[in-house]
Image 1 (cartoon, helix red, strand yellow):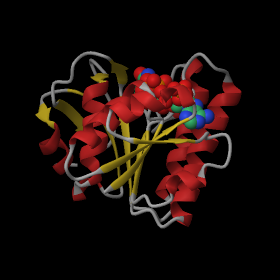
Image 2 (cartoon, protein in one colour; image 1 turned 45 degrees about the horizontal axis):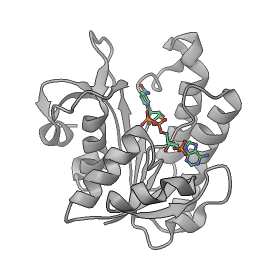
Image 3 (spheres, rainbow, N blue to C red; image 1 turned 180 degrees about the vertical axis):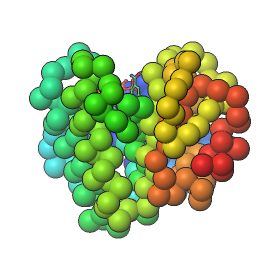
Image 4 (cartoon, rainbow, N blue to C red; image 1 turned 135 degrees about the vertical axis):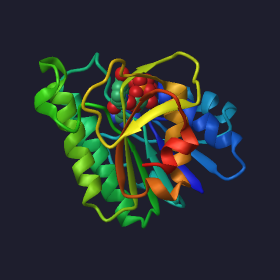
Length: 214
Ligand SMILES: NC(=O)c1ccc[n+]([C@@H]2O[C@H](COP(=O)([O-])OP(=O)(O)OC[C@H]3O[C@@H](n4cnc5c(N)ncnc54)[C@H](OP(=O)(O)O)[C@@H]3O)[C@@H](O)[C@H]2O)c1
């Protein structure tokens, strides 16, 4: 597939770009907003495209069959960016993907999005914004997968996860970004993940088996 990674310069996005470019099944286009990231994206084996979620970025989806959305405003910005990037940026990505007839849309969402009222108060605006974006995608008519990981770490991936439509109780909700990136990439070609929303944390089932079980 010809895959556009939105948020390609991020901690998870870079891992997604690398996995896609190492694979013989995909070509990868890396959406970045800083020209200074161009060289690194080229070294990772992708074709960089400069675009910003807060502007018109529909051109980034020309000649693309799939989108992986791994962008986010991060915890150091305010509520305005949560709305502009995590909510409205993601919703625009869905709308542009529809306009361009994109075949597959994989959303990196977050655990906690299922039920924002239960989230810690400081996180609530973020999970409400992510929920709005997820709902927009789920009713878009696109062939979607919504992946909701627990807390992200930079520990090396284990290739093993636990997966559920929605976990009700968890002892440990952390997961390596390596494993999240693998789930995002594997979901592209795993039929069982189409039109699905699921949560993932570090666990004991190989990723391929876990994705086929959902
Ligand atoms: N942190 C957690 O524990 C956690 C848990 C569950 C889910 N998540 C979700 O996972 C996502 C990825 O996490 P991460 O830690 O890998 O993220 P990250 O390193 O903060 O990367 C965020 C990416 O989004 C890009 N971005 C931000 N604003 C943009 C804009 N206006 N236009 C285009 N790109 C923009 C950033 O670009 P620049 O490099 O230019 O800033 C960067 O590439 C988060 O955003 C969140 O939604 C996080």
